[in-house]
Image (cartoon, rainbow, N blue to C red; front, side, top):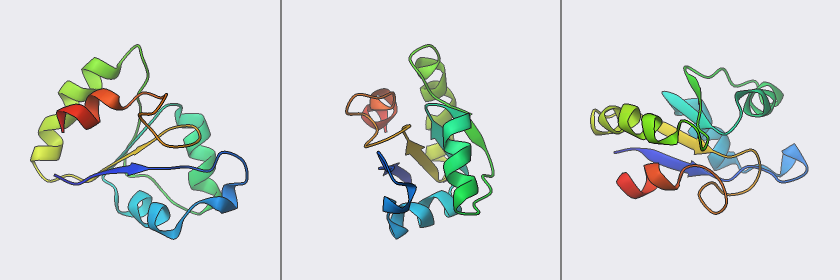
Amino acid sequence: MPLAVCATPIGNLDDITSRVLEELRRADVILCEDTRRTGMLLARFGIEARELLSNHEHNEAARVAELLPRLVGGERIALVSDAGMPTINDPGRRLVGEA
């Protein structure tokens, strides 16, 4: 069940780790708070997401129901927030808990 919880830079985008960049490149799905902000991060590092999905307080329950079977099926999901570590104060707690 490959779920990568990826910390993103709070300020300077160059503070991202090489491991997070590799997880984003390998992910079948990138689950993020805001697709526009994550899209800017991906563009900065030349990463083309196979699938970029939003995850926020209004759709989190539905996303968990949608993505858990995909995780069990072996897809790689990278969970990111707009800045910092997902699930601390950001959407993602449900998915991590269920996974």
